[in-house]
Length: 111
Length: 115
Image 1 (cartoon, each protein chain N blue to C red):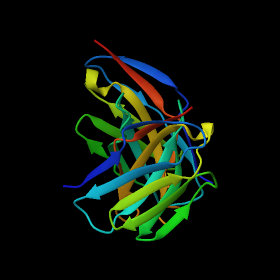
Image 2 (image 1 turned 30 degrees about the vertical axis):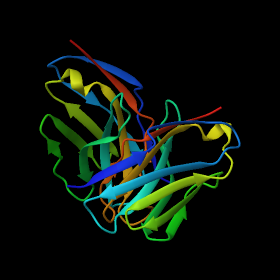
Image 3 (image 1 turned 45 degrees about the vertical axis):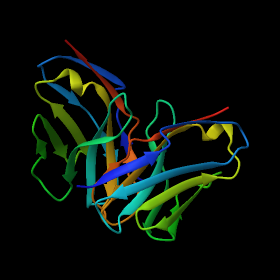
Image 4 (image 1 turned 180 degrees about the vertical axis):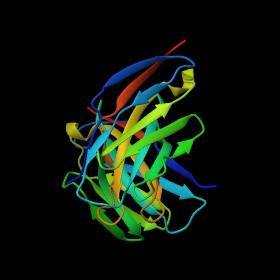
């Protein structure tokens, strides 16, 4: 069966510091991968998605970037965090255009 | 652009009773997927049920079933025999079958289950 991991689970970072969130998927190959952000009390917003190694599409211009160095690894990064980057970040994987399955998420608080 | 609307921010139900969560959406596409996700206090998004727009039959998963009305663009979730573990945020989501990769989410609805 497929599993999806995210780390860290919680992160508190000062404004202006760098960020790296990691997501890995097990039990499948060549998945589509997604990064979503959920602000407090709101639904999810797609940030980036990837259909293959090195292929990244951005949905929302912002302070963040994403990379996919390996087939089942998806990384969300920032060079300098802003207060507005605080939120809950969820990684998801899917096959083709069907269901997306989500990881446990990372709580990011920027102070 | 597609939009998903969940008009009821909160609902409550007594344990063992039935509750229906409403969702409407707007799209000009004819082929798409609709989902209900559950987000418990742990905040992990868990798939509850999926409906394919070209299928007329309503999806069912154990105690969860949907009422899909394509013409009305309505997609409600019925939870039968509610359990304490059903308490969570519930999100309705839309995904194009041939267009954008993203899931379009509603703002969610908080379900409380009273013992």
